[in-house]
Length: 232
Image 1 (cartoon, rainbow, N blue to C red):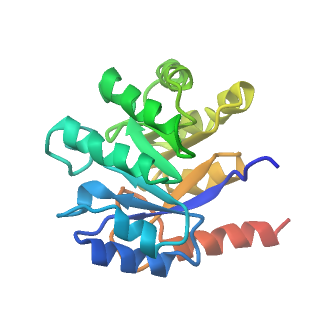
Image 2 (image 1 turned 90 degrees about the vertical axis):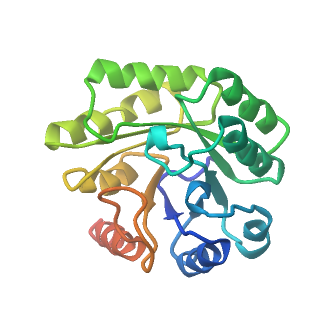
């Protein structure tokens, strides 16, 4: 049976493990996947999440150079993600800009597990040209990861169209892709990507903070998607 596309991932960016678990449990009824932003935790631990959360878990440890909060050594950052793989996380997110040796470390660990690796690329200022975006996609495709993620910042509607157009490459190459835009202009892409066979979109917990500009709350996203479904 082919895997479902258009998953809703609720991103949890809390300061403590206890707060993150509480937010994840509240969001669990509406989410397909729960993302734990390890870089937001003051004292990150993995075991409590596997014990307390039933939904598939995605672990991300985003460095400051890609819009995250992790400021430590790269070996420590990747070590937490490697531990997540070994514990059987459903997904682990690794940045395309991560050094090749550390990326390979995560990919090698995943070969011995059921974890799917998302290789991600973000631009928090603008949306590059179609050629530049296609180049990023091709590099992700060749990386050995299971899923690509390309997220840019939309300054006008043409930026949105360029990013959503990447789903054509995804279909042609049979490589699942997460692709949408951040910012106010990009909000529509977070919904549209679901209808265009985007692998996953991201939402904020109803009672928690947003981990990216333009992120909708999960309940708002569900209402919009249900309205689209009801209009069929």
